[in-house]
Image (cartoon, rainbow, N blue to C red; front, side, top):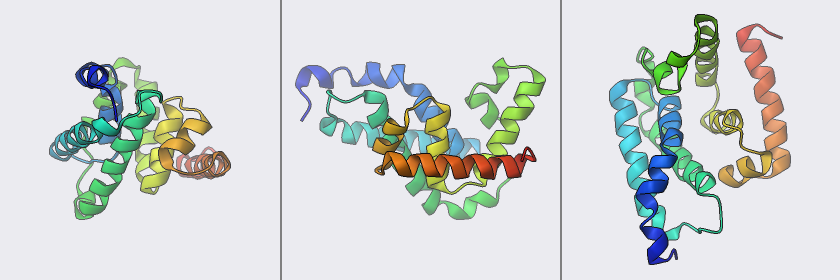
Amino acid sequence: MASAAVLTDFPALLDIHRGIVRKVAASYSRSRDDRDDLTQEIATALWQAWPSYDPARPFSTWMYRVALNVAISHRKRERYRWNEVPDEEAAEIVGAQDVDIDARQQLEALQRAMRQLSPVNRALLLLHLDGCSQRDCAEVLGTTEGNVATRLGRIKDQLRRFTGNA
Protein backbone atom coordinates (compact mmCIF):
# COMPACT_ATOMS: atom_id res chain seq x y z
CA MET A 1 0.00 0.00 0.00
CA ALA A 2 1.38 3.44 -0.91
CA SER A 3 1.96 5.88 1.91
CA ALA A 4 -0.24 8.97 2.39
CA ALA A 5 2.66 11.24 1.34
CA VAL A 6 3.09 9.39 -1.94
CA LEU A 7 -0.69 9.47 -2.57
CA THR A 8 -0.58 13.26 -2.76
CA ASP A 9 1.84 12.99 -5.70
CA PHE A 10 -0.71 11.33 -7.99
CA PRO A 11 -1.92 14.51 -9.75
CA ALA A 12 1.65 15.68 -10.33
CA LEU A 13 2.78 12.29 -11.64
CA LEU A 14 -0.28 12.04 -13.87
CA ASP A 15 0.45 15.50 -15.26
CA ILE A 16 4.13 14.70 -15.89
CA HIS A 17 3.27 11.46 -17.70
CA ARG A 18 0.04 12.55 -19.40
CA GLY A 19 1.63 11.84 -22.77
CA ILE A 20 1.41 8.12 -22.00
CA VAL A 21 -2.36 8.33 -21.61
CA ARG A 22 -2.66 10.45 -24.76
CA LYS A 23 -0.55 8.03 -26.84
CA VAL A 24 -2.37 4.96 -25.62
CA ALA A 25 -5.80 6.55 -26.15
CA ALA A 26 -4.84 7.72 -29.65
CA SER A 27 -3.52 4.26 -30.54
CA TYR A 28 -6.64 2.40 -29.42
CA SER A 29 -9.42 4.74 -30.59
CA ARG A 30 -10.66 5.93 -33.93
CA SER A 31 -12.66 9.06 -33.21
CA ARG A 32 -12.34 12.10 -30.98
CA ASP A 33 -15.29 10.99 -28.84
CA ASP A 34 -13.90 7.48 -28.47
CA ARG A 35 -10.47 8.89 -27.61
CA ASP A 36 -11.97 11.24 -25.02
CA ASP A 37 -13.96 8.38 -23.48
CA LEU A 38 -10.90 6.15 -23.38
CA THR A 39 -8.74 8.90 -21.88
CA GLN A 40 -11.29 9.36 -19.09
CA GLU A 41 -11.58 5.61 -18.58
CA ILE A 42 -7.79 5.31 -18.26
CA ALA A 43 -7.57 8.22 -15.82
CA THR A 44 -10.32 6.67 -13.69
CA ALA A 45 -8.60 3.27 -13.70
CA LEU A 46 -5.27 4.89 -12.76
CA TRP A 47 -6.91 6.65 -9.81
CA GLN A 48 -8.63 3.44 -8.68
CA ALA A 49 -5.38 1.46 -8.97
CA TRP A 50 -3.24 4.18 -7.37
CA PRO A 51 -3.37 2.77 -3.81
CA SER A 52 -1.71 -0.41 -5.10
CA TYR A 53 1.14 1.45 -6.84
CA ASP A 54 4.56 0.47 -5.47
CA PRO A 55 6.72 3.63 -5.32
CA ALA A 56 9.83 1.44 -5.52
CA ARG A 57 8.93 0.76 -9.18
CA PRO A 58 8.91 3.26 -12.05
CA PHE A 59 5.63 5.16 -12.24
CA SER A 60 5.68 5.21 -16.05
CA THR A 61 5.90 1.40 -16.24
CA TRP A 62 2.97 1.03 -13.86
CA MET A 63 1.02 3.68 -15.74
CA TYR A 64 1.59 1.96 -19.08
CA ARG A 65 0.42 -1.36 -17.65
CA VAL A 66 -2.83 0.11 -16.35
CA ALA A 67 -3.43 2.26 -19.44
CA LEU A 68 -2.79 -0.56 -21.91
CA ASN A 69 -4.96 -3.02 -19.99
CA VAL A 70 -7.82 -0.51 -20.01
CA ALA A 71 -7.28 0.30 -23.70
CA ILE A 72 -7.22 -3.35 -24.77
CA SER A 73 -10.40 -4.05 -22.79
CA HIS A 74 -12.01 -0.93 -24.25
CA ARG A 75 -11.03 -2.02 -27.77
CA LYS A 76 -12.64 -5.41 -27.25
CA ARG A 77 -15.87 -3.83 -25.94
CA GLU A 78 -16.02 -1.25 -28.73
CA ARG A 79 -14.94 -3.54 -31.58
CA TYR A 80 -17.90 -2.61 -33.76
CA ARG A 81 -16.76 1.04 -33.82
CA TRP A 82 -13.53 0.13 -35.62
CA ASN A 83 -15.36 0.39 -38.94
CA GLU A 84 -15.41 4.17 -38.56
CA VAL A 85 -13.20 6.39 -40.67
CA PRO A 86 -9.93 7.16 -38.83
CA ASP A 87 -9.89 10.44 -36.94
CA GLU A 88 -7.68 12.91 -38.78
CA GLU A 89 -6.80 14.59 -35.50
CA ALA A 90 -5.16 11.43 -34.09
CA ALA A 91 -1.81 12.38 -35.63
CA GLU A 92 -1.89 15.65 -33.71
CA ILE A 93 -2.22 13.77 -30.45
CA VAL A 94 1.15 12.07 -30.88
CA GLY A 95 3.02 15.16 -32.05
CA ALA A 96 2.77 15.01 -35.84
CA GLN A 97 2.00 18.71 -35.98
CA ASP A 98 5.60 19.41 -34.95
CA VAL A 99 7.24 17.64 -37.92
CA ASP A 100 7.70 18.33 -41.62
CA ILE A 101 5.41 16.90 -44.31
CA ASP A 102 7.59 13.85 -45.08
CA ALA A 103 7.91 12.93 -41.42
CA ARG A 104 4.16 13.46 -40.92
CA GLN A 105 3.41 11.12 -43.85
CA GLN A 106 5.73 8.50 -42.35
CA LEU A 107 4.02 8.88 -38.98
CA GLU A 108 0.59 8.49 -40.57
CA ALA A 109 1.78 5.37 -42.43
CA LEU A 110 3.08 3.96 -39.15
CA GLN A 111 -0.26 4.67 -37.46
CA ARG A 112 -2.13 2.91 -40.28
CA ALA A 113 0.24 -0.04 -39.97
CA MET A 114 -0.19 -0.12 -36.18
CA ARG A 115 -3.96 -0.44 -36.62
CA GLN A 116 -3.28 -3.70 -38.47
CA LEU A 117 -1.55 -5.19 -35.40
CA SER A 118 -3.26 -7.15 -32.66
CA PRO A 119 -3.96 -5.12 -29.51
CA VAL A 120 -1.06 -6.75 -27.62
CA ASN A 121 1.40 -6.24 -30.48
CA ARG A 122 0.23 -2.63 -30.81
CA ALA A 123 0.91 -2.18 -27.09
CA LEU A 124 4.39 -3.64 -27.47
CA LEU A 125 5.19 -1.43 -30.44
CA LEU A 126 3.94 1.64 -28.58
CA LEU A 127 6.18 0.80 -25.62
CA HIS A 128 9.14 0.14 -27.91
CA LEU A 129 8.66 3.40 -29.80
CA ASP A 130 8.49 5.23 -26.49
CA GLY A 131 11.95 3.92 -25.63
CA CYS A 132 11.01 1.29 -23.07
CA SER A 133 13.58 -1.45 -22.57
CA GLN A 134 12.69 -5.06 -23.33
CA ARG A 135 12.67 -5.68 -19.59
CA ASP A 136 10.15 -2.86 -19.03
CA CYS A 137 8.04 -4.07 -21.96
CA ALA A 138 8.00 -7.56 -20.50
CA GLU A 139 6.98 -6.22 -17.10
CA VAL A 140 4.16 -4.09 -18.51
CA LEU A 141 2.83 -6.88 -20.71
CA GLY A 142 3.34 -9.66 -18.16
CA THR A 143 5.62 -11.77 -20.36
CA THR A 144 9.30 -12.62 -20.72
CA GLU A 145 12.08 -10.57 -22.31
CA GLY A 146 12.60 -13.38 -24.81
CA ASN A 147 8.96 -13.20 -25.84
CA VAL A 148 9.26 -9.42 -26.23
CA ALA A 149 12.33 -9.79 -28.45
CA THR A 150 10.62 -12.41 -30.62
CA ARG A 151 7.42 -10.37 -30.93
CA LEU A 152 9.36 -7.20 -31.79
CA GLY A 153 11.16 -9.01 -34.58
CA ARG A 154 7.88 -10.28 -35.99
CA ILE A 155 6.24 -6.86 -35.64
CA LYS A 156 9.11 -5.21 -37.52
CA ASP A 157 8.79 -7.79 -40.31
CA GLN A 158 5.04 -7.21 -40.45
CA LEU A 159 5.50 -3.43 -40.60
CA ARG A 160 8.08 -3.74 -43.36
CA ARG A 161 5.66 -5.83 -45.40
CA PHE A 162 2.80 -3.42 -44.74
CA THR A 163 4.79 -0.32 -45.70
CA GLY A 164 6.53 -2.00 -48.65
CA ASN A 165 10.02 -1.65 -47.14
CA ALA A 166 10.78 -5.38 -47.11
